[in-house]
Amino acid sequence: MARIVKKFGGTSVGDVDRIKNVANIIREDVEKGHQVAVVVSARSGVTNELIARAKAINEQPDEREMDVLLAVGEQETIALTAMALHSLGIEAISMTGAQAGIKTDLAHTRARIVSMNCERIEAALGKGSVVIVAGFQGVNDEGTTTTLGRGGSDLSAIALASGLNADLCQIYTDVDGVYTADPRIVPKASKIQEISYEEMLEMASLGTKVMQARSVEFANKFNVVFEVRSSFDTSIPGTIVKQEVSSMEDVVVRGVALDRNQAKIMVSNIPDKPGSAAQIFEALGKANVCVDMIVQNIGRNGVANLTFTVTRDDSKRSLDAVEKVLNELGGGEVAVFGEVVKLSVVGIGMRSHSGVASKLFASLADVKSNIQIISTSEIKISVVIDEEGAEEAVRAVHTAFGLDKAEA
Image (tube, rainbow, N blue to C red; front, side, top):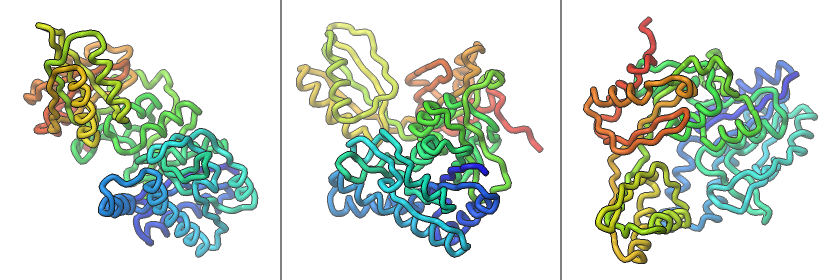
């Protein structure tokens, strides 16, 4: 007998027929005698609909009340999934994040998990019930519902697998694994059989939508091996995400990611003196803006220029925050450029192989794609380029690193 945690995303539970399909997938493991805990998301589109309703009432709704509202989506799904299992003659019980013992900090709309109390789930599993847990949500010390941010159901599943010491954690989604690039952009992209936490974390944070980055961080910290696989064809094995092994370094570049949710902020003619940059980034931090890539030019004639990237969602907040600082500094201008994207190559093999940067830059030059900003780490190189022609650039880079799937 194994203990298994299964997570099903919004498209996997998108309607009644798909919820019935999920119930049948769960039944296969129950009939084998396994203990099964399940994490589900809200049905696809429900969260966006709830957000739209909130903003139709108040353009800037209170974050506490948003958490109360958004938690409704998952609570609908857990009840329907439990009912679907009941119709198959399987004992099942649904639990909200609070009932499942998911304790978070006090932050609303982007809370972090601080502890797991799995006693209630353990008791239900011990009685032979399947436990259906609402993903994306928890409860804080004040007894108030919190949510974990977009993709938070992945985090719920990984945390639950850790708390239950599960033998297996499966993340079911609408794709059958992690690919070397988005197959919609690169038809020759191929599925990756195994990928390290580090590589998966980079790809998740760089625009790959398969997993939430924070969930991969959690899995790495607590060594939770998990599999990303399809809920629509369970006969196909997925991608295993695990600790790095030596053979992984044989592949120089594991994948190419494209992040369209990027905006470039240019701050020019700021006073070239100690503390100017610190004031700007302190203000951005207070505005809860996550800054990605940063470039500062050498100051001349008493002024300097600064360029950085943020998500497009944060561009307005960034602009407002920087403008206030420039007034305090007594000079400077700020402008936002939204028509940019971030293209990245990722691979732990980059640590031990040279020439990656030159090959990347040459492949971009071949398709006339001009590089605006460059950022590197041990296992990643990212560049900001124009949005126009970005997909052609991804295909060129994918081919240059030998990632194209061989023709059948």
